[in-house]
Image 1 (cartoon, helix red, strand yellow):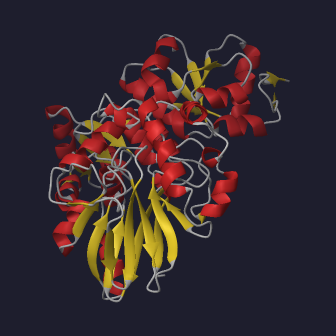
Image 2 (cartoon, one colour; image 1 turned 135 degrees about the horizontal axis):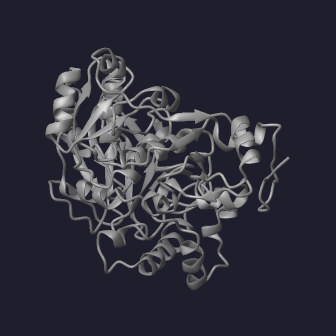
Length: 473
């Protein structure tokens, strides 16, 4: 069967390209559709359908632009109510793509419209399932997201539906089917996903905790709901965009990639309520940045942190990027619904600096310097901005936890009138933390280069491998 997985690591997202006899279908496409158009053109195939497994929360799908540019029909599973033209399939309905068949299997649980697509080859042999967020490798889709859009859909109700879908619709299928999920490790749509992006259904029946046949429905619900973290704030907003529709990606790109001179950039920053987002790496940012800008590096876990820390997806944004990466930044923001970039600093930060504009900096110290500071002053305020679970696993004695993912609460413990040292795992999150607090009037934050990794590697620290805290030699 001619099926290709198109994987995007920064979102841990998998789309699929299916082709037979000159016809093609795309499953769960990302916002930018050029890769799918180019793939079909390469084989001189016509995209006939865009299949959606559900209304996605962690990204804005490209189904509307694909349908507009190719004439393809959008297909959702039963109960979906999109605000645009689409085929709402019936359970067990079959669609033809060339000589292949795509069978609809309604599998509510992650969301009520969640659907799995069974792929059948030209000989009638069942090949695999495109499972969306119903079944991952090593996990299943979390059932607590839809309640943020429809209040009466409690996570307990959805978990019960998911139990029934897995037991009655998925587990009876053949063991040799290949499972093609929508996400892999790193996605916030599950809690225990494998780094593998495909597997056989038979193997998943053996190793996936959620497919344990001994679990009662009550036990399953408890197991599925245990350990869920708070979903990123942009998830409900992305769901609504996928349901109601959205602006063309081409228009978003055109608006976001307007080059602004330092003078025009400064004027836009002063005349609008735009947030200035600097996407350079932490060291470059620390050495000089536009005052009041925040730093979220494009080469880290960019889109999820944008979504977690900028609560309004309609927030106007001005960009400072490494020259040549402007389109990449606008694209990656649009994937998660941030469509209101209004331009970028032409020539990057160097142009701003060369124009004689005001520049701010953030001081950094090495892990060795931090050790000396803490030895000389055991009461020096040092904060670890990693997630609480990371902090509880290992941390430096005397260092408090102030997680970036709940920065509005964390900042309450940060003193404003003292020099404060902060670190994360490797230096990415701590610079985000420092930049946000600097924009809020905290002028005495010092970042630790290399974060906890550098601390562990330093000969001046002794790090335990269990919950017991680290101690200085």
